[in-house]
Image 1 (tube, rainbow, N blue to C red):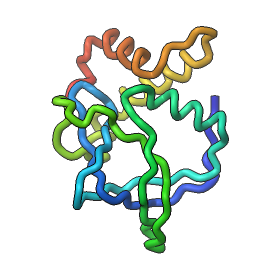
Image 2: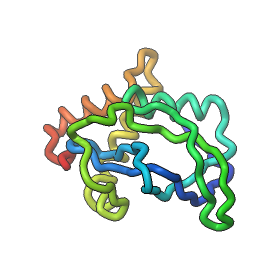
Image 3: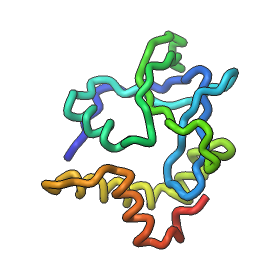
Image 4: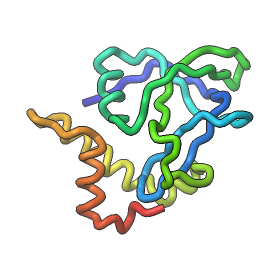
Length: 146
């Protein structure tokens, strides 16, 4: 399974906040007034690749249309992002920091992602959350805490 992204733009997403999640190796994005996050817009994603992304984000996220501003030109456009469904989730905290994540959770995230890829190749594949929970339980949560 290979995803090919044709163009990647650095962007700023208006009225959003990226939270850390206790016990998870990935963040949650929620709408928050007067906040913005930076990220990437990926163009050229095929329908099958988008289907894989939707399966990966699973039921914990909802795909929503948001306004984003390209950092290079300040051009505003609309793009889809995956927003955390449970806005009242007590496990959300603070502000997710990419550099902290890279040092402490990236390896676990990549392992979880590879488990998802392998699972998708099976005739009766599990969704990403089930794959994550299986990985989490195998590792007793030792590397996956906040």
